[in-house]
Length: 283
Image (cartoon, rainbow, N blue to C red; front, side):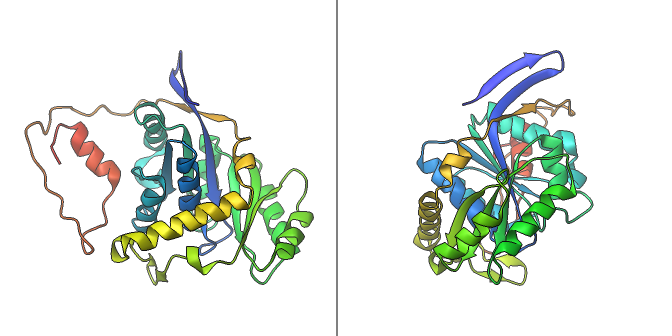
């Protein structure tokens, strides 16, 4: 449900939102975020996904999962106000009724880290942990990360790559009542996305049915794990319109801009293309 209201500070859009982070890279954030977006889409949600940081590769997967454009949010490159405006715009103009944000690296990594954005935007965090080679220790990691700072809410844990139902139960039992296990996901090669030294392999380099089958299988896995009742408890987050410099709507009026796009030319920022269109250009 989308709620839009106005106050003396400007318009406010309210929409449920969730920030998915992890202790480290390689924990499965992108796969789980994309598959959760696909699951919510299947249940009739208009999902908009955002990627924290300047990443080019992960958004390509996230776009396939959500079936909607993905905008990168980088506090250093674009500033807090611009980043907030992108979510506000997605909820108001894009009519999104659920927002997902995927973090970068570990929760506290970087000068402007995932935890900073979650805190500044008031978005609750779900922690994705690759629990291979550990059990109860995953709960200690989750509690430690949650208690390291007190300016954001960590609402749940997703145990990725569990070896068995019992393995997931060990993690669940070790977590405190106020930090529940949202899902215990078994190891499943049918949903894994291939990687190389720079990150994930681009979807364009795979067959269309290959990436689709992984997204659908991952969505099935999340639903079977029982994640939806926890997601449904999320309360709307307020996203306020920001005072950012206005764009001249006719600066590029009548101009046509061609964008080369194939396997070699694929690293583009959605926000840059949107800006050109806002300035009147035909893409």
